[in-house]
Image 1 (cartoon, rainbow, N blue to C red):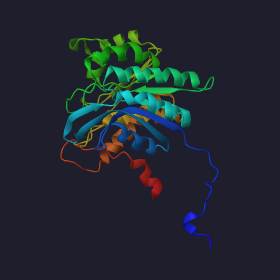
Image 2 (cartoon, rainbow, N blue to C red):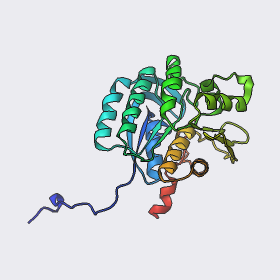
Image 3 (cartoon, rainbow, N blue to C red):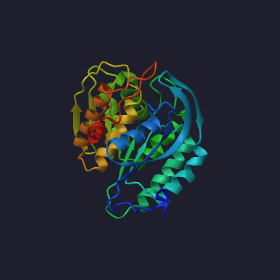
Image 4 (cartoon, rainbow, N blue to C red):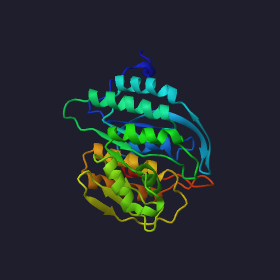
Length: 285
């Protein structure tokens, strides 16, 4: 008699889900970084792979320490590319200049390996500080990110403070001036300035053609705001991979994060995580 536990069952023939890759830091509390990105990818029905750039000791109470594993990035990305190449890439916390260079090298190889005329989507969430104020990118890496990485990405999703730093704008210049500086620095980019810390929490999109769009936000009364930037940029990548036009993708990503704030699980004693898997609840019922 054949042991049922050892019977082999071939999986049903089906189109595999699109593969998307996150290159980011590891948050052991699963509110941000790699662990959050993978939840977002799953929420949209995509298959997520991951390359860790930094380990962090953090929780909802903040980041206590970081440890770079950037020397391992090249090998990780090469192995993933050889077996499960992605159709889209999200980049989050890089940590140091070595991680920026390794990511740039990978993106150049990845773009060259993509089939002719195949769409590409690379979304950069330029993580400079944690939500608790801890520095997450070494000062000497900021220039490398600006000069070397920006030409290789299609979208960037800074908050207003990050936008001013990357654009080289003084705080007194305001958002419009920072947008203009950023557009001159990288005219090919779609730039989304996220306003989650503002009142009202509106987002602004500037397209490569110079067109601008404002996306009104709704304030959700919650302390569970850990990882909103990670969630937004990952959701944006998902919507782009699924075929949304730029403005549609931003609107969909913003709506997703707003509902994730409403459905936060309420764990932790600090700034809690979002309810990132909320779209799957209906699918499982």
